[in-house]
Every structure is written in C-alpha cells, then in structure tokens.
Figure: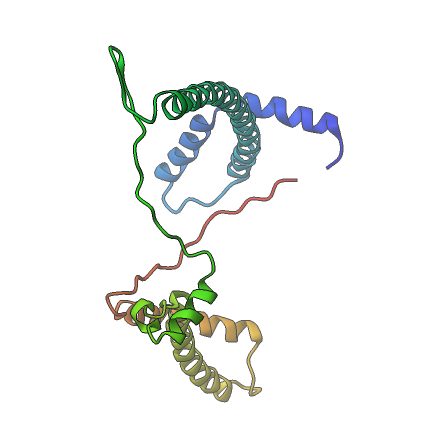
Length: 227
C-alpha cells in the first residue's frame, strides 16, 4: 500500500476505536448465542481491532524512542559526574603516592588510603598452558571434565520421538492405502495421519522423560501481517 492519504485515513480511524468496547461486544455475542457463527459484523470488529493494534504499536514505538532519548541524556549527565569523581580520585591517589609517602591520610571528613591488592595471575593463552602442563605431566590436575552438549542431547530425544512417529505413521498410511479403492491416498491425508500420531504419542513419550529434561508442550501464537 503506497497511498499516504489512505495511511492517514487509517490512522484517524484507529484513533477513535475503543478496543475494550469492541471486545465486549463480541464477548456478549458469544455468550448470548450458543453455537455462535462468525458474522460480517464480527469481521468488521476484528478488522478495526487489527487496525487499532497497528497504530497502538506505532505509538508504543514512539514512546519507546522518547524514553530512550531521555535515558541517553541522563546517562550522559551521570557519566559526566562519574568522570569528575574519577578525576578527584586520581588527584588524591597521586597526592598520597607522591607527596604523602603512600601513608594513610585521616581527616575530619574521612580517610584516604592506598588499599593493597595481592598479586595474582591470569591465563592469557590456554593452548600454551596446556602444552606446558602436558610436558610436565600435570595436565590432568587442571583439566575439567568435558562440557555436556545440551543441544545435542535435546535433539537426540526429539529425533527418537520423531522416529517413533514415523514408524507408526507409515504403518497407518500403509493400512489406509491398502483399504482405499484406488490403492493410494493424498499427501494431505498422509500429513493428517502423521499429525494425529504425533499428538497421540506426545504426552506418553514426553512425560516419561528423565528428570533432567523439561517438556515444553506445543504452542500456537497469533501472527498478523499488516500491509
């Protein structure tokens, strides 16, 4: 859609939409009419909801941008103050080291001292360290157990389930093909059989997983694409 006037019209329409009222109207219809069948009026309400949704998201993006701008400004102010604090710290540290012989300075408002941090080491080349330790015969002392490949483990359970589904689905497809008049079924029907088998086997399989695995059931989420 490239007509800017149409965009403006949609935006004006969206501004006047009362989402809560629309939802309540549809809920009232569902509650009053048992076995309610969607009507053109329902489609119009959904259309208005989708339109409102688009421009509510647009407004949320605008507010997010304003918030981020404010945060950026305040972060700049904070960082400037922290730079001033660091500058003061550097000056006092130089004074203690160069003019006060490294000694503690006690004043009425507080005490300034040079706190000692013990020496320490840090590995900067793990490969060279391994070679050295191996030559000394001490590599095992510092070697950690291999890391568990969690992704590979998860995939193995999923692949095992998919194999069970495939075997059972092929069995049912074969039975249905043999029972059909022309000796074949559509690909769509094969997909339906596979999905049916998957749904039937899922709970028993996944609820019997070891306790170190978590079962995350299938989910379905709304997806709306606007022009």
